[in-house]
Image 1: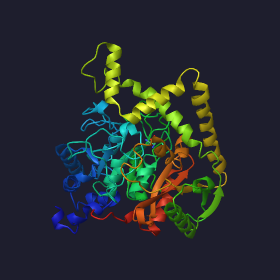
Image 2: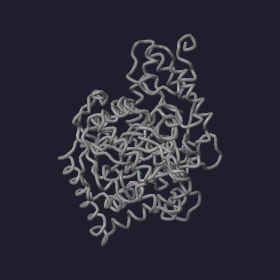
Image 3: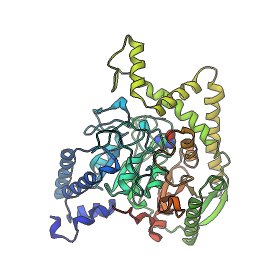
Image 4: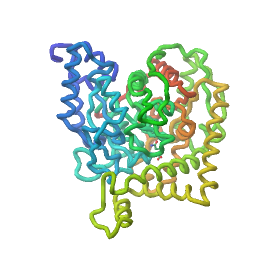
Amino acid sequence: MASSTSLSQGALHDLGVKALAQALRNKQVSAVEVAQHFLDRAAAHTNLGAFVDVRTEVTLAQAAAADARIAQGSAGALEGVPIAHKDIFATKDFVTTAGSRMLAGYRSPFDATVVHRLAQAGMVTLGKLSCDEFAMGSSNENTATTAVGHSSLQPVRNPWSTDRIPGGSSGGSAAAVAARITPAATGTDTGGSIRQPAAFCGITGIKPTYGRASRYGMVAFASSLDQAGPMARSAEDCALLLSALCGPDLDRDATSLDRPEEDFARDLDRAVHGLRIGVPQEFFGEGLSDDVRKAVHAALAQLEALGAILVPIRLPRTELSIPVYYTIAPAEASSNLSRFDGVRYGHRAAQYTDLADMYQQTRAQGFGDEVKRRIMIGTYVLSHGYYDAYYLQAQKIRRMVADDFQDAFRHCDVIAGPVAPTVAWKLGEKSDDPVANYLADIFTLPASLAGLPGMSLPVGFASATADAGLPIGMQLIGNYFQEARLLNLAHRFQQATDFHAAKPAGF
Ligand code: GLN
C-alpha cells in the first residue's frame, strides 16, 4: 500500500505521533507496515538495551486490527500509531517485571488502565521498556531485567552517547523515543522519572496533576506520588497522548480524580503574550552546571521573545524536598512492597526452613540493593519512636512545599527552570553512591511532592568539552490542572526552535 504513495519507508520513524496518525488515517501507509518498521528498528538497535520484551506476533495482530478499523471507518484518535510501555505497567500480552527479579517473567492477567486507554485510542503496542527496579532510581542502572537481544544484564544506553545513562527511572522509554525506535512511550513519574530521562535524552515528557492518570495496574512505588504520563518528541504529540491517557477511573483507583476527560491539544497554538513565567531563584544556585544554566537562560530569553514576562519568584523549601521525598517515598514503598512475599506474586525461594525463612529468603533474593535500602529506610521512619521525628515531620514540610507553590502562583502563571543540575552522567559514575543520585533530583521533587503537573522539553546541548553534544532539558511546572497551559507554552517554544527535532547520530 505504502509503496505507491509518497511516504517512503525510510522516513517513517522520523514521523511523530500526529503525523503518523494522519498518514494512517489517509491510508498512505498501513498500521502493519508501520509496526513492522518500528519492530525492525528495535531489532537493529538492541545495543541500547531499551526493550525488555518484544512479541512480534502480538504487535502485528494489534496492527492488523487497527488496519481493519481504519478500513471500516471506525478508527480511534491514534489508530495504528505505535507505543511502547514502561515495564511498570501491567500488560496481559507482555511480561510485567517492574525491573525486578521478584517479577521475572511475570504475566499479568489484566492491562493497566493507561495501557487499556491507549489501546482504546487505537495505539499498537511495540513491547515493554526497561526501567529502574520498582521505578526507584535516576539512571536505569537499578534493574534486574535482561534486555531483548542480550543474555545477561545490560544497562540502557543513552542514544546521544552510549557511555552515558539515559536517566531514570523511565530510562528505556526515553532512550527508545530518542532513538526513534518508537514515536511514543509511557513513563511514570514519582519524583522526576518522566522529566529527568526526557531531559537527558533530548525528548519531551509530561507528568500530569496527581490523580489525572489512573494508577490502576501501575506497579506501586510511592502511591501518593506515582503518576503516569507520555514521552514523545514534541509537546504536540504529548498533548495528543495525554488526552487519551488521562481520565477518571473511580472504581479502580481511589485517588483518581472525578474530572471529565480533556483535550489537552486545544490551546496549543494560543499566543503566550503576557504569560507570566516564574523563575525560582533556588533553581539557579550553586551545583547547577554552566551548560545547563546557559541553555535554560537562553530558553527563558526565547520565551520572552515570544511575549512572555519573566518574574523572579522564591521556592524556599526546594532543598528540603530531597530529605522529605527520601523519607516519604521509602515509607510508602516499604508498605507497598510488603505484598511481594513469595506467596501472592512472582519469585519464591527454592529452599527454606519455615514460613518466616521463606519470606526472608524470597525477599533477599528477589529485591535489588536500592529497593532493600528503601524498604529499610521506610520501615525505620515509620517505626514507633521515629514516626514523629521523621515521617510526620516530612509530611508537614511536604505541605509547606505545596503552600510555597501556591504563594508563587499568585505572581506567575507557569514556573520554569532546569530539570536536572547536569546533563546525563557516565554509566557507573554514581552507581555506588545513592546520595549523589538523590541530590540530582532536587529540581523535580518539589512539583512531585505538591502533586503539580510538570514537563520537560529539550532546550539545547552542552558545549563543555567532556559533555559536548549532550541534550539539556527545561522544566515547566503549572498549577493544578494547567497541563494544557504547559503544553501550549512548550509548543510555542518548539515552533520557534528545533531542539526537539535534533537527532542523535546514527539513528
Ligand atoms: N529518582 C527518584 C527516585 O529514585 C524518582 C524516581 C521516580 O520518579 N520514579 O526515587
